[in-house]
Length: 342
Image (cartoon, rainbow, N blue to C red):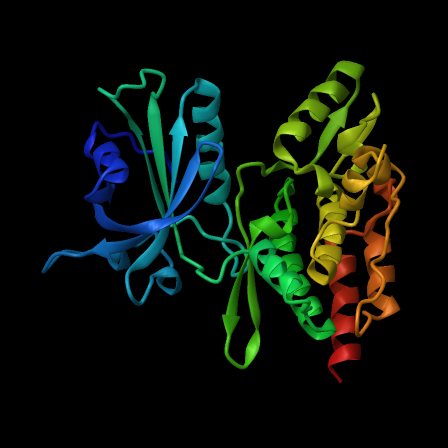
């Protein structure tokens, strides 16, 4: 899906005040803001379809299963101040448009527009990205609420959520060349509760996704990768080779496997296995990651089975060559689901 440019300043007026927003030929009314972070804001919007108008449901590029029954969607607005930011948004659009999987959040439509006549002359463009909406929140949101209530997912639910994340990542890792998400974490996992079924888990935010395999053949290349990772890969879930990259290394999609192991731990216990280091006097998150110094919480009742702990440790191998690939993980998690569901 290419980037469409338009001179419609009404985009800016609508999102910053009252009114409607047009994304290409479709019109949306802003209901409320759902969240924000950095230069991005997320809104709940409702499609406005005039009598006889086609509406989003008629767009041939959109999977009918992604069309909302009540016309509500999530709209991400990104303020773009530099050429680098513009290229990052274009990259996110390009990469998002590659994927089609029930456990990956689909990009339904988008527009990038020039902004003129604003008081802030540094604002050159704004981007609008339209997605299906999942109002139950992220895995991070739900884990925070559950922790406050001293509640936990059952072992079966932990495995069912994790299995869906594996399915989404397998889709990305199956490309030629493979793509890495590069920021797998609870804050990038949408959860939707379903009556009589396991929660639906959907991996989102492909702003950091890139072809996974990279040959590092010099110190400068290693430092460039580390700098990129420090900006795009959340520290508590970042693989050791992205913290301290050797001058001769072959980086691949197993950076995601490390993050996946951290996320399995977080589904159980609410945080990364290394965040404890941030609260210790003289503690170092980087050292905890590099040495795979994992601390298991005590007092969890009932305790999770040792099989899950060993599963996490299997993924959290400091040496990438020792980590399993996504196919190995899926085989193992399916066996665990059978074991603990029977």
